[in-house]
Amino acid sequence: MSVESIITENLDICTSAIKTKSASGRGSSNKLELYGIKKLRELILTLAVSGKLLPQEIDDEPALTYIETLQKEKNALIKERNFRKSKLSSEIDVSGYKFELPANWCWKRLGDLFFISSSSRVNKKDWQESGVPFYRAREIVQLARKGIAEDDLFISEELYQNLTKAGVYPEKKDIMVTGVGTIGVPYIVTSKDKFYFKDASVLIIKSTDSLYAEYIELFMKSPFWINSIHEQSMGTTVHTLTIVRANEAHIAIPPLNEQKRIVKKVDELMALCDQLESQTEASFEAHQILVQSLLETLTNAKDADELNESWQRISQHFDVLFTTEDSIDQLKQTILQLAVMGKLVKQDPNDEPASKLLERIAAEKELLVKDKKIKKQKPLPPISEDEKPFQLPSGWNWCRGESIADFIDPQPSHRTPPVVENGVPYIGYTDINFDNGIDFNGARKVSANVLDEHRERYELKMGDFVFGKIGTLGKPFFLTEPFEYCLSANLILIQPRSNVVLPEFLASFLNSPVLYSMLEKKKTNSTHSVFGIKKARLLVIPLPPLCEQHRILVKLEVLNKICDELKRRVNTQISLKLKLADSHLTASL
Image 1 (cartoon, rainbow, N blue to C red):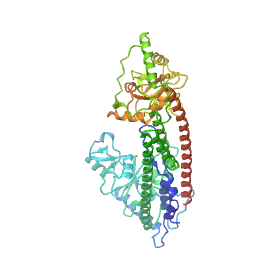
Image 2: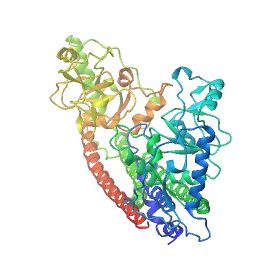
Image 3: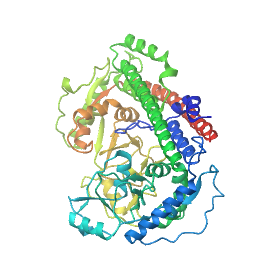
Image 4: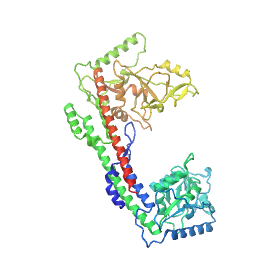
């Protein structure tokens, strides 16, 4: 069966086997892994280097004759340039390989055919900000993948000239191979290239007249090469490809003419894979835009009738729209937005309006000031119409954050206390796992005196939650008992006044797209989003009647469970498609 037939027969499997990263959370980028097409590319390369991609032609000069030519050229190069010969093993053991080569192919070690070396050492003191580019493994990877490297290290022209006279340097048709980091990545040097490279970080395969570099590059992109060089470095702390390992690495050598046909055919098939990728990505992007546009009709609905109309339109195509993790995450965020806009449940005219709650809180504060239990605070600024992102339903009120909750900076000095060996956990944002809770064991430890100091400023209780100040916003975390820990300076402690706002409702608002859009409008030019105490206290928050808050939370719980079950089913389908891609394409070998 031809590869074109394999692609045609497995087209649906290849294009539907897609891994996606969840778009939930702030600032996350939604990326695709087109797993089926990735496996198809691997299949093409595996068939190519095992002699199964194209039929063999009897008129081709055998690989052994070509190999003899390469070996003569390699020996002449070593003699001409006075290179040091490498010691190689005497035999090649290919008994463990999963495929047999065609009769006119041969297994050889790389070091049997090519001179492999590294560079002369360049000391750090010789690095410059301009001159001849000096590449490490990461720049070679950039060249291989993008055709261009981001130069930030250079050496002088004088040093470069001295190095070219004294040792090995990159010339046209040489193959550079990464030896550290992402190992085994090849790059063919062009006539326009002029650079030097770091010893031990990058290897060089010197070109000879008969070397067909494009086939070697293709072989080094194949799963066989990638797997074998990683197996060689098993047991080491970091995977490396040394000169010794590169010399001993095995390569399948076809006749030269067949190499050229293979490279041409692989280029054609990879171009076909590129087209499939573009079409799949365009289709996925169109699906995302469609889902987003339809969900926006819900949040933009002017009244209950229009909202119901939009929902009916979406529900008729539910099984087509919500087929990816991303689309379900969008649905969850839309539900959350509808909740805090007052569009998720019906209003009850018998509910005590939010304005009464705020009046009661204000009266309680006045009494506490009168009794000298708290200091009189400056009045909060009135909320202007420009600050209100949408119109509230009857019974709701806009209020400032400080009206309904206390926002506390746990470590106002912002100085991290000294670490002690056996002490009290000092919890930061990175110590919080939103699925498994606080990692007390991994958190830094501070002395018990620090906990006493914190307790003088605040007392933790059930219903309190923390919120990240810097970086990832929109992920409130409810604190758990016993409260034998301190909170770090990168967290805000939020203590809702539960007789006015339910902690879960306030947390839902702080996790909603509404907050994110409000913060975006006020975003500064700083690198990270910052949610400080002042911004939190003046934050404009929609407040429903207390009874409606209860109804909203009940509805949210029901809908979130439906979304989670939907996501579980989608993940099961995705897993099945990935397994199908593996089994069908592996069976084609």
